[in-house]
Image (cartoon, rainbow, N blue to C red):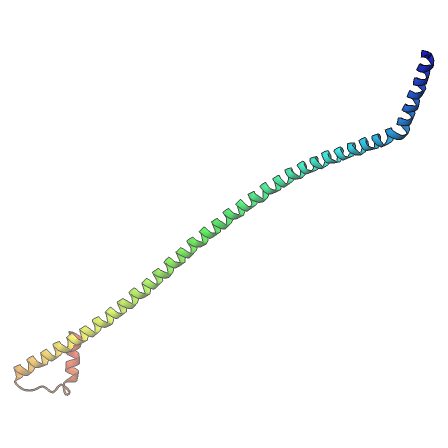
Length: 156
């Protein structure tokens, strides 16, 4: 065998193999590689979108948390203000009730004092009449001398 013929045959077979691979084997491999490249690119883009959305969600959650804290502090301040107002209202109501009770007690004391004074006047008048009766040794008619007794009561 001649080495030149073998070499030419092998070269022809090599070119046919290359043509066959380029025609039938290479396009599916290139398509598979392109599909894989596109899939990887889509995955990376989705990862970047996810990362961006995570950052946005993190910012939004921080804003919502801040707003909730501000709102909670406002609600607490309002509750404290309202509780102070309720305490003040209760103090005022208790003071008013105490003033009413004191006024009622004073009125009751004044009425009782008036009754005691009247009873004392009556007793003094009776004692005066009894004393006058003993002095005069005769009975004094209380009905006949009512004006005199009233005047004595008023002087006492």
